[in-house]
Image 1 (cartoon, helix red, strand yellow):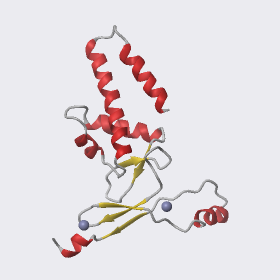
Image 2 (tube, protein in one colour):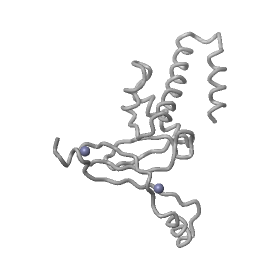
Image 3 (cartoon, helix red, strand yellow):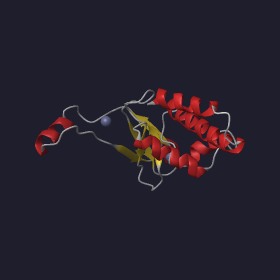
Image 4 (cartoon, protein in one colour):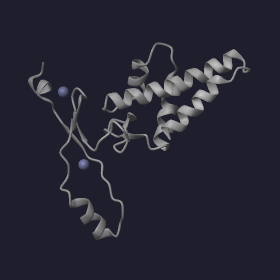
Length: 155
Ligand SMILES: [Zn+2]
Ligand SMILES: [Zn+2]
């Protein structure tokens, strides 16, 4: 998927006859898509579209483009949506993708900081649930919430 879209991008940018403005616009979108994927790969944490926009070079693209790119990546299975219960859409690299791995989150209810947790549910729970209900390919999502040490101290 990745290599074929890269190939396509190169072909697009080699076209000579398109109006400069069109070519420039398409080039910018392609570049921002690659930069967004790179950020998600290098920094494994749940990103809001606003976070990503702030990490991209100034005026690279707008928030709607970032959001559209993320939902497209989600359809392609490159990223997964993280729901931390506050109504904000967050995305991180999918756990089966390069740079991704299976993990959970621990979220401070006061300051909203997010820690990555590698502990997981007992290994046989998924297969037990699957067996009991006749399901296949059972996976799980799990997020923890609490008050972090700094917020407990009130500093
Ligand atoms: Zn906190
Ligand atoms: Zn798990």
